[in-house]
Length: 455
Image (cartoon, rainbow, N blue to C red; front, side, top):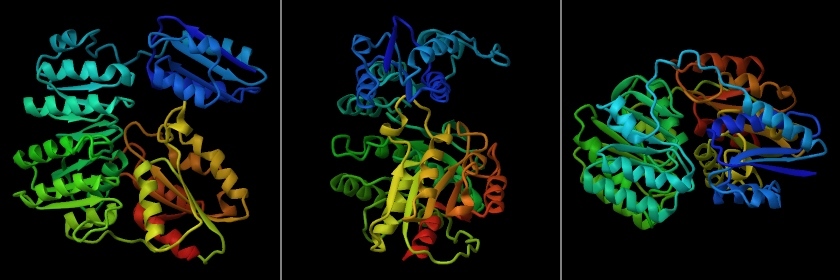
């Protein structure tokens, strides 16, 4: 049974909607549930997940769609309305300045120089342009922004001498301030430009654990090195870090870039007055770091301490179950370079797994069903996972992972984070080790360890 209800003219924060979705899916008689604003892209996600009825098809971008599938869908729909009517706890937030428009926000904070845009992608470009026109740097957390809008916004930002971070920019550290998914890091002299959120987190945390610090971590969005964008954000961020007196060294990170765009960036790097290390995953060229770990080690001029992990070799396959998309891509690349085939790597943060649900870095419980299936699969001998800490991430992701019967399989994990993070890197690593999980020093080391067990 599939039920949709359209709440006309109702808008709620996407994270709040995702949490309600998760509560509905925990109810008996519910196969799947999602609450989403009725924008075209969101309706496409609901449609592909088999959650959109004819009533939901009529929703507009100003409406909220509640979608439930299962024998008890009608009862769950009533529960959804109850949950939506509950007022969130406002304790501690009353002193924060509030505004209903950009103009009102600038009246409340006249010295502000950065705007964060987190609204449905169809409207994000309009608001980002307004902020740029007011002389603000902009971080666009929203995804599903058309490529042509992204290019136009980055051209406008360049004309005005501003930074446009994103769209789909999930991580940034500006002058020591973490934004969105980011970690608690010491200040230092290393600047990072990254077209990858978890790539920025991994490298910045490894630098911190090696005794270094971060001046700024500038996210540029995962499509910045696409041929149609041409690294506009990356080049602008590189210019900004070169002009920044607090930055002495620079790291550039990206998932596989367009080859001609990569060439343009590398040519610009050669002209830099500051030492640069480049890690473009999947671009196997001389001078390019092949892993995020290697990039951190090269910028620090030292090796990351490898803690010994001993385990017997296994016959069977590795299944990688990842919260971080770039960490998943890095592990898959390491296996490919070793000529290891037949193994499986799943990015559980991809749209197909997060339709109407929190990202697995917010709610790692989403991974547990996949872990349970891997534990019971006789063809899988090693399970490879990431545990990502920091602001915005789950308060205790290691404990969530350990709800599985991890003793039945060899589990190899990396923990992306620092001692300063709310979860504490050592505390999370200790929880895992006490349960028999093999904890490697980095994501690349974890992938190499898993590969060595089945090679």
